Structures are given as C-alpha cells and as structure tokens.
Length: 501
Ligand SMILES: [Fe+2]
Ligand SMILES: [Fe+2]
Image 1 (tube, rainbow, N blue to C red):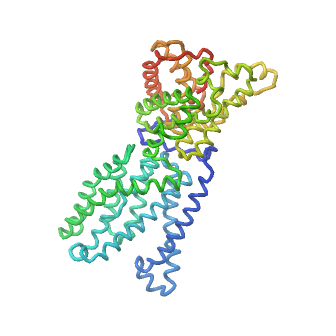
Image 2 (image 1 turned 90 degrees about the vertical axis):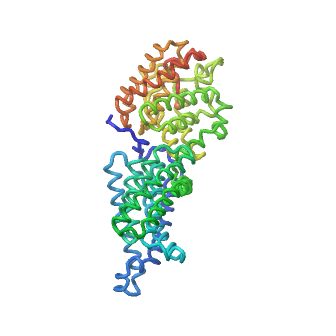
Image 3 (image 1 turned 120 degrees about the vertical axis):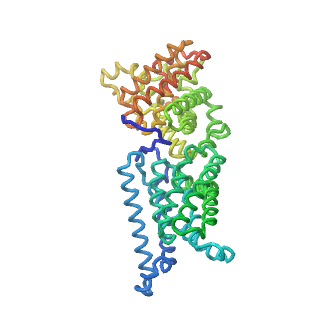
C-alpha cells in the first residue's frame, strides 16, 4: 500500500481486465484516425496563415508538406507529453483511450482557438474598437480543462491544460500574455470542477471561473500592452468563464458516448430507480436490491470519510451485483424463508454459479453501456477472494484431489481504485453483519474489524491507493452505519461466514 492524498478520483486504471465492452478500443481508434485526417486537412487549409514565411520559401508545395510536417510535430509533442505523464506520473496513468481523448481534445482546442480569432476578426462592428489580440481571451480552454477533470482526474487536467495552452497559444499568434492567460484560466476552471454531480453545478463552476478569467485578462493586457484594450480583455475573459459551463456540458455527452466515460452527472442519471436494470433488480431479486442499496449507503459513508468519490461509490454499489439477475435463488439474500438450493448441489457446481455473477455482471454492464467506471468496479468487487462456505464443504474432495482450491476463487482483478476497494469492504461487511442475530453495536464493530483485517491480510487491497489510515477510517464509517441500522435485520440463519456479497 502507498500513501495518498485526497484526490477527486483514483486513477490507477486497470489496463486490461476483461471488463471492456466490445468496441471500447476500435471506436476511439477509428475516431482518432478520422480526427487525424480532419486535422491534416485543416492544417493544409491554414498552413499559409500559420507559417507565412515557410509558405513563401516552399512555394506551391507548402500547403501539403506543411500540413504533414505540422501534424507530425503536434502529434509528436502530444505523444511525448502524455506518454511521459502516463508512464511516470502516478495518478495520471493513461489508458489508450485516455491518450486518444486528450490528443483529440487538445487538437480540437487548437483549431477552436484559430477559429475564434479568425471569425471575430471578420465582424466589422467589433473590428473598429477592439484590438485583435484580445480575441485570444475567448479561447475556451477553461471548458475543456473542466471536462478533463470531470471525466478523468485532477492530475490529468493539469497536464492537459499545459499541453493545450502551448498549442492554442501557438494558434493565437504565440504571444506570452495568451500563453499565461490560457495556463491560468485552464487551471482555474479545472480547480473549481471538483465535484460536479449535476448540470447546475457545472454552470456554477463556470460562473466562479469567470471573475478569475476576467482579472487575469485585465492584468495581462495592461502589463503587456497598456490600457487600450483592458476593458475588452476583461469582458472577453468574463464571457469565456461564463460560457465554459455550457460548453463543457455540450462536449461531455459526446466524449462519454465516443470514449466510454461516465461523468458524475451520468452516474446520477443511472442512480434513478427508473433505470431498467434497477427496476429488474428490484422486482426479480428484491434481496439483492436491498443488499445493493445498503452497500451503496455504506460505500458512500466510507468514501466521504477518506475524500474518495461518494457518487461513484453509491451508484456503482447499486449495480455491483447485477450479474445475479436470473439466478436470484442461488444467493442467500434472496432465500429468506425458502429452502437453500445449494443443499442439493455439489460444492463445485454451487461455486461455479456464485462465481459467475461477476462475469455476467460485466457482460450486462457492457450491454447497458453503464460506462467503464461502474464496469471495472463490478469486475473487481470480489477481487481474487475465496468462497469460504463452499470451500469448507469441499475440503474432503480437495484432500482426495477431486477438486482444487482455485475452483472456489473469484477470477479478479483485485480492486485498482479506492472506490472499488471501498465497495469490496462494504459488500463483505454488509453480508457478514446481515448474518448476525440482532447484533449489538460492539458485535457489529468486531465483525466489521474482522472482515476488514481478513481482506487486508488476504492481499486484496494490494493494487489500490488505500493507506492504512484510509482503511481504518473506512472501517469505522461502515461500522457506524451498520450499527445504526442492524437492529431491524431479518435473520439469515444459513448465511454466516459464507454469506455471499
Ligand atoms: Fe454484493
Ligand atoms: Fe457480488
């Protein structure tokens, strides 16, 4: 385990975990190739304007050669910058689709910067009283930096802001004030987009960013060019900030659909009881639905205790056991009052049915496009833990070499993020406390501590950024919530140690 500061979202992304819905890679790849072609054409068209001296020297061949050279140079810059960050910055390990997304966004901003300046220069009413240089204060970098923070994380949004500032400043004549303004406004936008659970909050982030952008534009304009364009610089800076919310809200659904991201806004939409999967869970597996709601409450409390993402924890918990749909009777939480079907099954067959709910959950999540953040948590919520109840039953068979311990182990992977780890802890503790008969708060606390220690000692938390302090804080938060609700429990006499979360 390693130390970690409070961050918006743990970003150690599992490179490959079998959780990917089909099309996760080919879609962004096709998109990036298409974007590359579009950018090359745009470079071709604007090549003369961007590099007039080179155009003069190369004559008629410049547009083509210049477009290829510029595309290569920009691609090289972005791949070196994000490649280095992805390898070396611990919280910014970038998957292939993150890399493609960031490059596409940076290039899009490059041309947006060029378009903003060119289009405004065409408006005669503006041209008379406004110096052309102040148009650069309208480059929508704050909006893009906000999108990156909301969809990936804070570290990546800063890396993106630096790369996109350099590129966009180059597109806007490459002057120092523009570069400084873009660095400052992008950081201001990203810095205020910490928790964005709904559209209103996103608009408010823009409103809060506006005064910073206006002040920065006024200060930079005054210090580099005197008082001539100060008023317009301030107005354009403020407008840039105010528009960043609506622009981010327009860009996010496209990014979510094309690259498979799930913002907190999307997660909040998924948490509504009207979602077909939650409706099915409620009607077909009411025990599992109740368990999932409880796990969500525990996980949210755990996330709040350590500064992890409570929205992700609560919503992912609601969906973590969707793989049980269609097999309700095999899981203890749905067996209240009925015979235990596992009594008539071999331990091997029982464990195969129980273990399959993880893989099936990942499949259903892909089918319903729940997004990678939820899908990864579904895949990781049991890690590589053992199904102890059936393992104990199968001990004689294992001794006779008719079965192996591996048959009773979940396939993994282990939790890669703090949120996935919190859900694993909430899931296991909820299942264990559910099996207690009217427990006292002390009994709940002892049970939760025992489960947390078992998961830690089993090495299930070895691949996520949870400190020992975090682990204790999460355990304490879960214990408090469970103790408060435990007195109203229904008895589950057969669940015990082997209750399956
Ligand atoms: Fe569960
Ligand atoms: Fe589960």
